[in-house]
Image 1 (cartoon, rainbow, N blue to C red):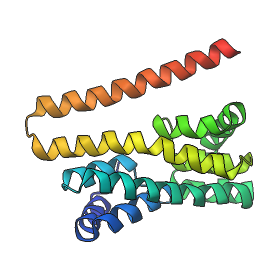
Image 2 (image 1 turned 90 degrees about the vertical axis):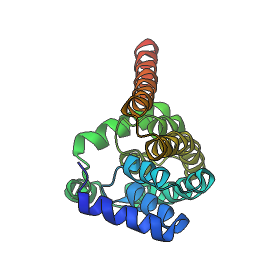
Image 3 (image 1 turned 180 degrees about the vertical axis):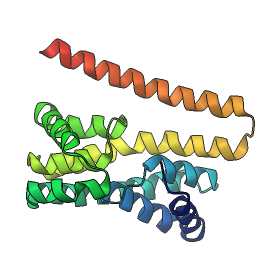
Image 4 (image 1 turned 60 degrees about the vertical axis):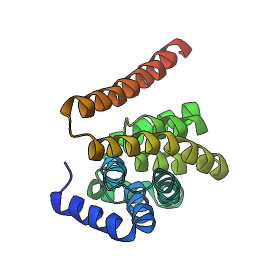
Length: 195
């Protein structure tokens, strides 16, 4: 659950700073601050910020923030990450699962982790650094993965602002959740088959 005061501050920052506000919020979300990306991007869409701006500055902020997580995983000692991870809502089992996933699927794990909200972005970023995934594929897959999510969430935010009918909002949310569930199921089934 997001602190209402933090959510209000993010909305004010994006309303006032627009593109820079979206960039900073997504940078913080993707690096170390426990902010759900959904709050930032849906909020930006609901504020009526241009979709192209949300996608450009949101994806750049998210990718830059992910690079911070990658650097933490690659250069910080694992005990340090586990000790302070609780402050950014990262538990040891999150890192272990993401690390195993990253070892198994390589750069594809980053793309999948960005598209499907299974665990927070920062966990995949840290795990990618831990397994010493090549940096360039990490950045490319991060950017490619965040763009579709940002697009869908921004459209959803716009719909909330434009349409006050609950059925429209609920339908859009259900479509998003259904798509995420189908992708997750496909990935899990593919993993079972490959074993």
